[in-house]
Amino acid sequence: MAPVLILCAGLGTRLRPLTQSIPKPLVPLAHRPILHHMLDHLCQLEPSRFFINTHHLPDRIEAAIPARHWGGRSIEVRHEPDLLDTGGTVSNFIDLLNPDEDLIVCNGDIVTNFDICSLWQAHKAHEADATLLLMPDGPVKNVTITLDDGSAVGRIADLRGTTGASGRRCQFSGISVLSARFLAKLPPRGHQFSLVDAWLQALYDGRPPHALVDDSGASWADLGDRRSLLDTHQAIAAGTFRLPGTSHALPLIHPQAKISAKADVDAESWIGPGAVVEGGATIRRSVVFEYARIHSGATLEDCVAASNAQIPPALHRQRILA
Image (tube, rainbow, N blue to C red; front, side, top):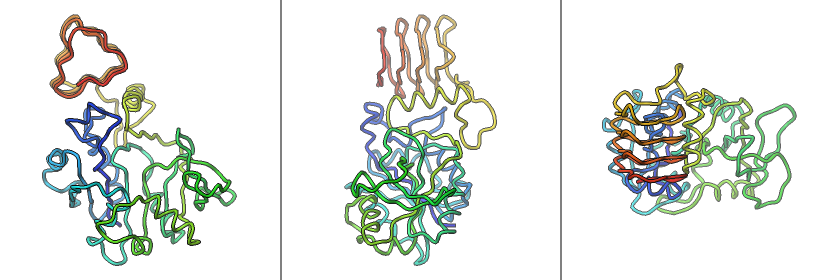
């Protein structure tokens, strides 16, 4: 099986100030870093190895994978002093591939229970140069595809409204498979460019990428902002989002959290390990990360409290608190 590249170099600007002290792939989801959920799920592919790129707070990511192995697979980490964008990052790892190896690429802020093996199978069955995994719905439906009748696999006709072609509009999931043929045509290592540009060039050259549309009803979460982070936590609590590899309900209150009997914490909020909620504090539809302290008199509504944050007495609404 091909190796998997997880893109972990993003700055996480929409999650600031949370991501000023922690890289986005390490933001906790249900008491575990997003990256750990991803690695567990991607192991179902039985990849030959993992690649990870870093930029913002690289030491934190390396500390999260201290053995440089996961699920019996090695992890190669490469730091980018200057961001290379998605395509440049792919080129930066090509020298580690065998000449005939494909590469699976995943954004570092995605959690899903989609059967990733079906993407690989579709890619190989169609002998595709590149295969993008698409979601049928979402806020940014900027990928247009043409599908054969009754098929979930088609060809890319437009990206970001560039060609104006008609067809079924979907949202890119952040996961793709790139063939050795496709990789060989990318700009050399050290160039900054987007994979979108490479896919568009393939389209213009008459070899449009393939696409698989996920009509399976799988759960998807792009955890790039406060709202998506809260909504996904609440969906997990409600049982409408099942984390991959999880067959039982997860505790919203971590066993190592300390909550005063006089605190008021609703049934939709998550309290992380080592967090302290003092008596007289109120928490509604919020997530409190590890070792944060919610002081008496503080009220949190639709908030995310960062790790080690000290939340003073006040009404806090729809904010990231650090």
